[in-house]
Image (cartoon, rainbow, N blue to C red; front, side):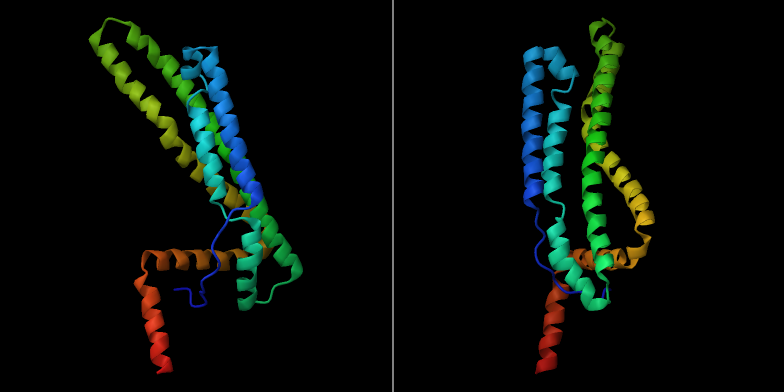
Length: 214
């Protein structure tokens, strides 16, 4: 248990993150409309479905990431209560989170490109099966086709998690000097999740605190 835990202010997105989400939405709609005007085949087999949907999902998810201002206003003061930090360490800690957030955005685009390739390539391979008269081949085509249709939306979060894990290792190797700050943040996050899942812990602590005053 993280003994030094205290509740911090609510996490919030920055104005920049909201703008990025709106841009993702606009680009997604434009891509879908433009490709639809090019023809139904181009829209369906191309980037008319998967890419717009994943762009919208990514834009929304980006607004759920903690902003740099939250780390500066909430987490940094909390860490400073526990240990003595220098201005250089604080600056590098905030820089770590700024870079992490932006790299995750770029890696999300890479994941979308991979998912779009899986969709287009998979459907291109499967489509000839539907043109044949053989029942077995058509059945195989349908089964594989359904798998291809759903695969990008299952593959996207898997790829993103994998990319984030790799990114975290790379960034930690570069910011080894502030690892102790990042470890405190991770401990706070784990304890916050534990308390969120078990609200009775907070009530028990409040009861214990009140009993001490009685």
